[in-house]
Length: 323
Image 1 (cartoon, one colour):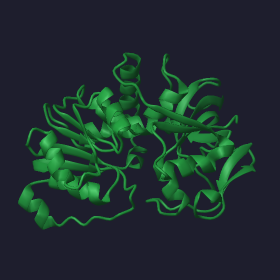
Image 2: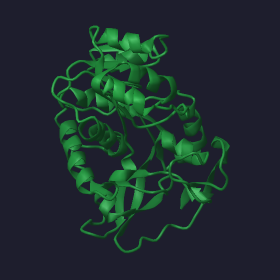
Image 3: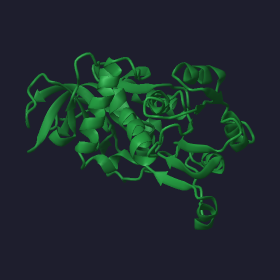
Image 4: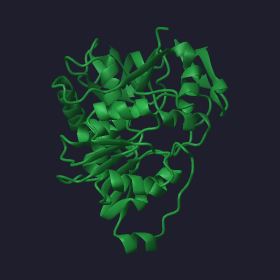
């Protein structure tokens, strides 16, 4: 089978299109013919060996796929349309997935949409429900609001009870996209006094919840904009900048900093299956519309990573193994 493998850590140039044996599923595993392999910013961290979970070389990256069951197991039949969460191995024509991390795609939901909802949708759902524990009427700040996860947070926030939804995005076009998805106001994150701008966008009141995947200055300014008992939920660190928060700061302000990493849900099928089914239902009803980005040929994985790191993308990015 064709696959994209890395044999050394580094920039996009380490991604190599190679021929590898088709993987063999073990007990409790399925073989999936991949229709789409998902791309995530975390893949770029893995490629540079800067990810939370370290990888051993050589490795085929890719933590999510959508496709059809090639070899059945665990109640799944050949030909079933499924999405699956993987450890690695998604950038390929075939992938092996645990039955426990594989889910049927509902009728009326395409593979592209299902894949957009698998990691980004589940992340958005749990950021609101599990990490922020959003309460009725609370104000919400969504950074990178035109991106795959950010756009879904914006769309889910009000149906899940949010009051005012404040989006940030780096260009006028992207801010317009966030407003079209349901944000009440959109702010330029590069403004010098971002905390002041966020409070102003909330009618002069500090905000209740902020979601940040950038780290660095965005994290610091978001924390400063929080009201007492406000929560800053960190679910990424795309700037690769570390921020120190002291216990004294938290005590004086009654603010909270919460971390979220989807991988901690992998052993909890109940925390994956029910929310994903909810997301599929909301999509079929038209309540949620994931932003589908560029579909790259598998052979063009390097360009996909370059575009991802260069902030030239929007929406859910995927690889097509047939190309």
